[in-house]
Image 1 (cartoon, rainbow, N blue to C red):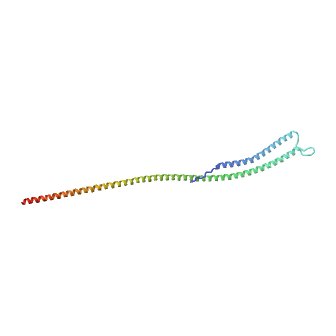
Image 2 (image 1 turned 90 degrees about the horizontal axis):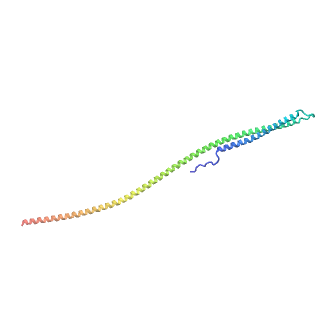
Length: 228
């Protein structure tokens, strides 16, 4: 049986951390631009404040010159104010764009989190399926090993029984041969004994016949002697 393939890529939690770090990096770059613009704006305001104090200490008033031309300080301040307003407007637009981008990134991160949760759930189900398949495979392996062991035990028992049956067969064959020999010898002995008994009986019968004849002759001789 083939085992399920294992995922060789990084775990999903590492992918989640990596995606969040990328989002934070993008947000940091966006806010870095805003912070730099605020720093430039604060620096410019500080420089203007210092310059204004220096001009005031030098005795330059806010009124126009004797020829009716505008005060250079006011013109410079108006230009700086216009520039600062432009930078502030740009800064607001940049901040709004950054907020919109942050919202978009938050939505994307939320979608990413949902996707990661779905993937995590899918991975969990796949792991459960893999673990169940591995447990089933181990169970089948154990059953197969037990059946193989039982087959080996039964095979050994069959071999032992065959050996015992073969030994009993050989023993029975030897006993049958021995019994046949013993029976034949017993029959031969009985035949010999019967023949000897027949011979003895015939001899005894012959002896008795001769004795009877002798007695008959003696009786006849005795009777013939009485007559004389």
